[in-house]
Image (cartoon, rainbow, N blue to C red; front, side):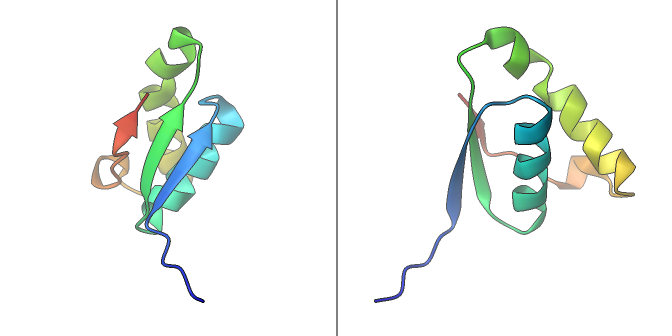
Length: 68
């Protein structure tokens, strides 16, 4: 049986979680990020943009669907 994955959940919005979320979003997946620490989520967008700049992308073109 084959399954189609279109949404991925990431637990942890720190550096590693942000990088994983970015690459998955870049590949076209809907990404949901969960982190129990609000300060980590607050700085997520900034880290997300830094990853995009590091990879030479326009991070505004990559969308994270939901931050929880």
